[in-house]
Image (tube, rainbow, N blue to C red; front, top):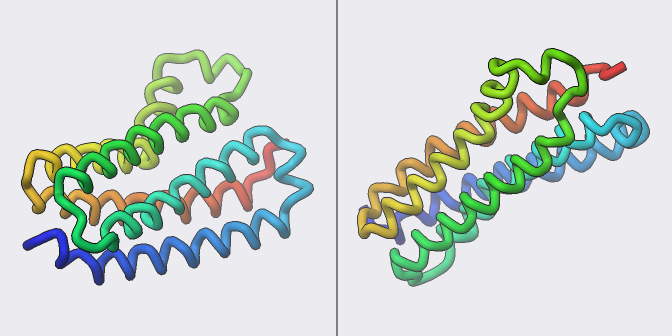
Length: 164
């Protein structure tokens, strides 16, 4: 399968992601005051936005016409790095100040999340495509599925949980 064959997948993934980004903005607008009062909710909302934007940006990359595989692989790797660093930076606002957050298990769970799994999958896909194997794009399918599911779960949690 060639890179050009991924256009329809990119269109569907981008459409789904774009719709979820729009719905997230509506949900945040409706809960603006509550979210603004709590740094953890703001961080969770920002992470959810980043997770929903990932498939949208991947779709744009896949839909770019006649793009050489080396360029696409490099773009995907850069996206993975930026996404991972962004999630880590924004995630710092979700850390509690209590004793529990200092435990080794809490730190491990804070690092190994579905959100970070998407980053690893994107990086692996980019490296595989950069190495000349278009089949590495199949890793993006899993990355997008994990991103959409974890984004919906994140949105649900930050909208229903009361941090007080």
